[in-house]
Amino acid sequence: MTDQHGELDAALERVIDAARAHLAAVRAAEGRIDDDAVWQAYVALNNVSYAYDEQLLDAFGEVTPWDVESIDPDEADERFGGGAEGAEATDPHPRVISVRQRRDYRVPSVSALIRVADIARREGTPEEDEPAPVEGVGEAVLELLQSGDGSLSALDVPELEPLDGVVMVSEVGTPVDLESFDDDDPVGPFQPAADDRLVGRLDEHPFLDEDDHDHAGHHH
Image (cartoon, rainbow, N blue to C red; front, side, top):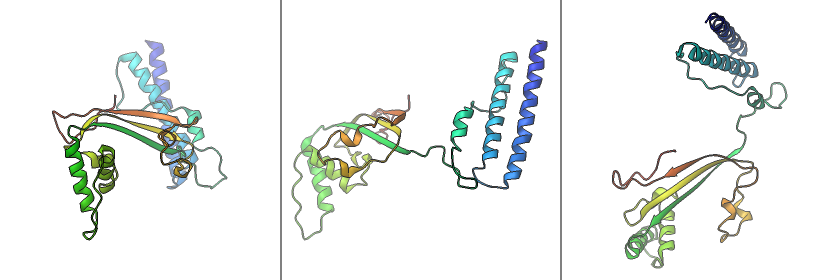
């Protein structure tokens, strides 16, 4: 155990040194946001704290109160890649975030769905005009979306029974250019590009028994 004691002492000294260096960098930055030296000192303090925590766990099965994960120093450097001295620091995530959502619905009664869509269309039409009747299930769903807030919550109506859904979050190089796709292109706007990076997927399952209003699932 003597070696482990020595290693633990050395690891703790590294934490203390790194904490002092971090404080010195913070003082020197005088409140500047995204200061390079502060960030580097932060990463160093984070990683030696993580190392000490791991060694304490290995040696004694004990942990510190610090809830830290190791930060890759190479990735940390990328956060401050380029930029002239004094220029604003680059954001660690300069890319565009793309959220793609799909939710499926069962239509228990077509006539009931068309009826609520007709009502929604009538409410959104000036009184002097006679709105055209809603024809078909697809048109009814579009009408509910347009008369609502445009989000899928506009489809939280008793006339639609929610099935499973999925939300995909990706980092993308360039935002979607809707002009470059035809209106009837079913794939183009949703097709991930080669350099898109999927961050994660959220599966949605309806909880109809517990709460008719909560259709969102939990992250697996």
